Image 1 (cartoon, rainbow, N blue to C red):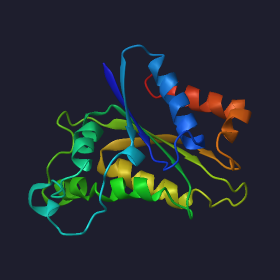
Image 2: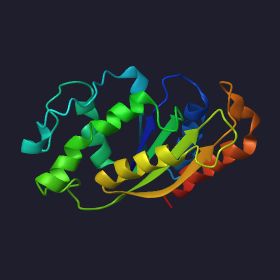
Image 3: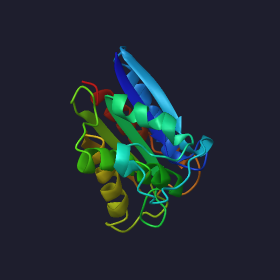
Length: 192
């Protein structure tokens, strides 16, 4: 059974990034032997990293909140699909807080020289980003760099992305059937 984790990074329910992530998950589920876990960050209580250095001692974050649930989900996943709207050229604040709290993995990997994944395997990672603006070739650059670093610390190979500009209104992506199909196809291909 392959484990797929879908990370919903938008603070807005049922927005364009949520819709696309749900389509990618449906694509992944076509395989049949897939267990999907949806992590909806807006429904969780996650504090920002306070740079206390506590994770440098044991490779685990000392802050006790919902993030403690997510750590095992990330390392047990065969596929991680992250979706976020673009805010000021980056991912949402909610998603960024989760990523920053993965400093514990960084400490585990680079300070304590401990493995991230027990089986020493590499997962596959895919990024979905939506933006209201339709111009600017560097619109997604900051977010892609952040997700690349996030995947790297989790021993997850960044295998692709779906970067969608010009999606202003909530649900506007439903008018873009080709993008919905691309999300579905991407999810399907992540496990084949």
